[in-house]
Image 1 (tube, rainbow, N blue to C red):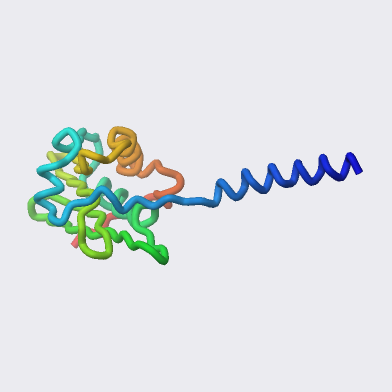
Image 2: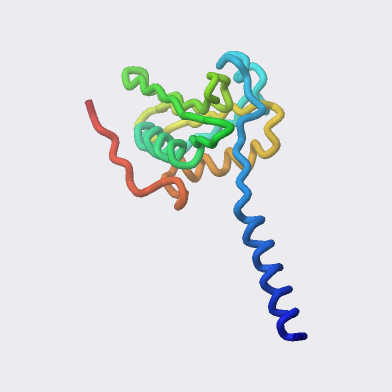
Length: 158
């Protein structure tokens, strides 16, 4: 009887830990109704860095990562990614928006010449882990996030 109680208690503890791992919290707030209001109220006026990579590679790495790891849908919420690539001015813009079109984030990818790119991330001031998220996006921009980047993305030249 004593062994049975220990086994049952052990199984209960394991099940509790496993069920705790199953709860996923998706981010839909804070958000802003317009792109301009997001940028005007961005954490630290936007976080920015330069990378020694071609801007098209950075853009497509981020696009792939956002589609895989930022966009989601549940019964209660939907977040989708939207993007725009303007090759004539070497500028890419990526957004994360809610189902109602509110802006959760904006990322700019700017070509600065041969193999040099600036990325700027705009998150709401209230975003609790903005610096960590920016570090994560740098890894994603390099194509090194094993969960979000699925391999080398080859930009298609028009």
